[in-house]
Image 1 (cartoon, rainbow, N blue to C red):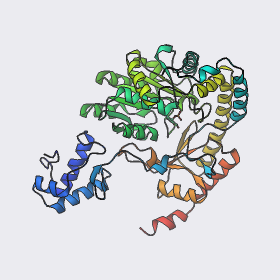
Image 2 (image 1 turned 60 degrees about the vertical axis):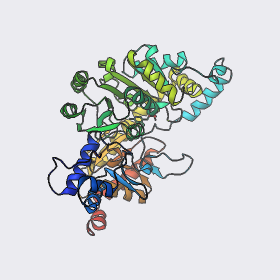
Image 3 (image 1 turned 135 degrees about the vertical axis):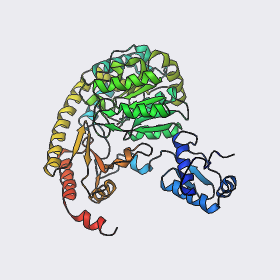
Image 4 (image 1 turned 90 degrees about the vertical axis):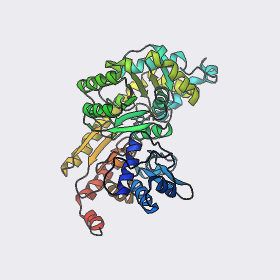
Length: 463
Ligand SMILES: Cc1ncc(COP(=O)(O)O)c(C=O)c1O
């Protein structure tokens, strides 16, 4: 028996069937990877023609609900992004002017690494760095994590509730594994961090992209979702939304938390970028620690290559997080964690953060001035500058145009969760290895493109 019926659906049969597929995807009856009945089988079951089923499946494919695989059938699509859109390439290969990823500024980290490695040579910690450790990490690493969370404004937590992770992505992957089961709903802002979409897809979670504004997820959108089908968890970047740079007010946090308590929803707060914003900004972790799993990382504050992060869970969830942790990688890498903790300890991290903040402020101002000069609506936070494109520009076309000039940026589509309609906007990042002069000349190229008429001639005349 198929769950695909036409009962209660009006209009042309093929549309009614496509609507039913959409409904079944939205409410979780059909999940990514599920195979739909063959055209013939479904036609027989529903008493309609094979042609109608073919048309319905084509319509569902057009809506990006299903994908037809030659020789194997029609399947419900995952939330997978085209992989080339969000894949980091080999850093030893020249990738042009890469403004596509939000990464720490390359300053004197390599020099500092030299000192740290030299210092390690005579350290009594060396044998321990070569041994297996518990999933929580070595105690002095956890202590450094505890101090980091406190210093960056997330709160003071028990060390027993804290894990050292392999960066932020690993942190929230493990949190989701611990909190949710396959098929559970995970609500997020309609535009979100693409790594979240990847993690949700791998774990067969039902992403529920919700409307948001400069202060993040709208409480009314969450409430409407809860009345239909409450999510099991929320994923939020409270203090620095990637890609738009927004931050939540205390009032917004409390409104969302109220609903979370009412519907028993846990929060996964991703503060990977938040540490570079204002540490006085309110957070879920500080205001509602009992319903929040905190994800922090040193990737943006120090560098991506050490890939060290911290996860803090409310006590009742610690055992489940520990089990999920052991099932993924057993433990974070003691050697890289030792180096990162040395930097937290010896003051280098503070200096690096201060230098980054100053440089980012300069870059944000300089880029913002150029964008404002041609009237471009934009917002920013940390490494990210989000630009709304004036008509008739489409984001993918600007990305293509920029590529012809050897400049890499990301279209809004990359950040769209599930079927959330991406606006015509792009994100460009001002961190990484790109020097001021190169950045500003890339921005000049982009603003020239956006204020020129080439686009209209090239793209709008052959429609
Ligand atoms: C919001 C957000 N979360 C998580 C990550 C991944 O963190 P990490 O690089 O520490 O794994 C990133 C990286 O850009 C991010 O922007």
